[in-house]
Image (cartoon, rainbow, N blue to C red; front, side, top):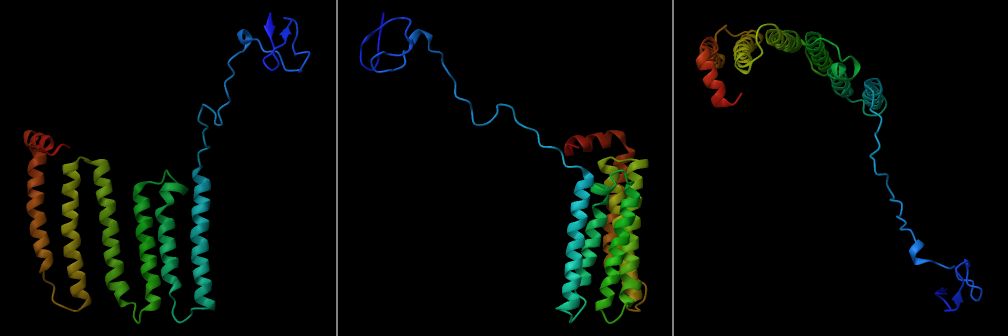
Length: 234
């Protein structure tokens, strides 16, 4: 026999509500523990991966909108100089640099470096529209950019086809730094019609030569190479 929890009247076991106050009859032995539903699911949902094609479209549209808007502002409002060419050139460089990441991921590294160099050359050419002479472009900017691009392609080819260890990469890098510095000084002297001789680049060349000899020695001696790798942890 049970009693109403509200008014205390004696209740029959078959009743579902109290006949006096209509309070539902609750049997403590039959109450099941009800768990509240959590506000968030137990399993984490997965967001759909963004495709390279969609990212490339978004990236290209942002760069196109930036270049076009700056070009219109330059043409219609702030037209004292062709300043928008700087922005347009930067947008072109950023788009070319992103080709292997978003647009064509299977592009060989050699073509990627070549396109990067061409984009920089185009940017430098756009700058000539804001300078009184384009001589600096043809005699300095273009040759230096071409040399840097060629050296980058060479070091990429050496790493892929000959050796790609840390010591080998350091050897290629110091050799190309020496070549680049000597080339830059000779081009600058040619630009200013000065006699061909080495000054500051000779110091760089000497330092790089010493490092190159040390690297070649380490690469040619297996025990020495292993000892250097263990001590430098690479």
